[in-house]
Amino acid sequence: MDNKITKKRLSQLFSYDWIAMIFTFIALVLLWQFIFQVTSVKLTRGQNFKYYVDYSITSKNEDAFLQLLSDEEVFDPINILRVEREGIFYGENDVLHTRLEVKDGDVIFTEPIKDEYGVGRAQSIIDSGYVYTFDRLLNDAKTYLETFKTNGSYDDAKITAHFLARMENDNRFRTEQEKADGIVLEKSRILRLDKEVLDFEYLLSCGEDVFYKYTRFSQSLEQSSEENKPDFTRWLQQEIDEGRENAKYGINLNALVGGTNKISTSSLFAVGEAQTAENVVLMAFNFREQQPDEQFDVITFINAIVRSCSNLYQGR
Image 1: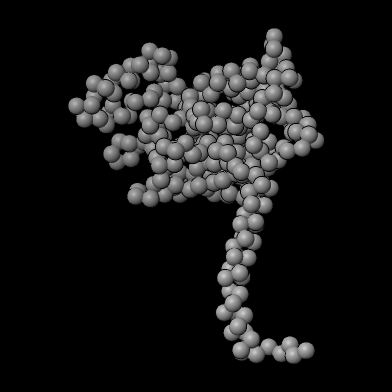
Image 2: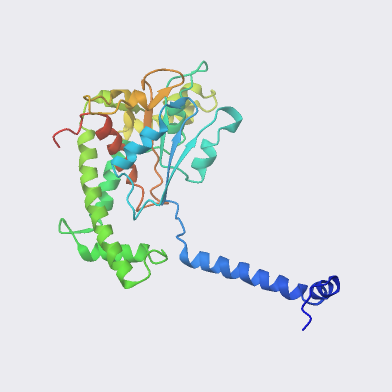
């Protein structure tokens, strides 16, 4: 049989079979996409933990900071599937407001120093309405944990039912064995969060110098036009009337100090070219409505930094 490849035979192949070849290729691509969609884990908003480093903050040793988070096992394997850092740029490239409008992000390292126009970055972010007061963060976390209790004790049936409902479309938990293993992890997550919340409550009783405190709308009122002053005055007074005057909005990293076995926050973050973490503030965003089960991982994140960089939790 003459099987020799010739120009004529190649021409005939591409003349008569090219359509079939294209359809076969398309079918293979679609099949691969289907397999990927079925087997891959699709991240929800909360399963991607993002921390921002603001434009005025220098991240001095990112590897050491990531190692800190790893050593403290901050991110629960049920809730957090990806950790992302985003640096914010100054001026026209500042995308923070855009990110926050779409409820993207968990915490931010920033600073409250006022510029030549009398504007502080931390104050501006707080006035925008996205930042948790630590007292509300604590209360919301307690409320969340109470949903898993009956008569003051954790109820396995409630934990199981909630887990199965929220993981219904999660490809990691398809078989009965995978679901059973996931329920074990979920119970562990709840119990760990319980401890983290207790530690965070203790933290809020520590010295006032640990916290960055601010009354929302104070800066906006100072910077407002005469036309807008009545509105900001009213909103500021509402904050005061509702008990949020000088509320705790952040951790002053420079206040976290410990012995020789602790990490210096000044080795991790600084304002501009400074050599210390003075004026570096860590704040948490309130996107509980969009990520009800992942929101309180910010508490674990904060606690990990406090434990690694200070003696505040020593003996607890």
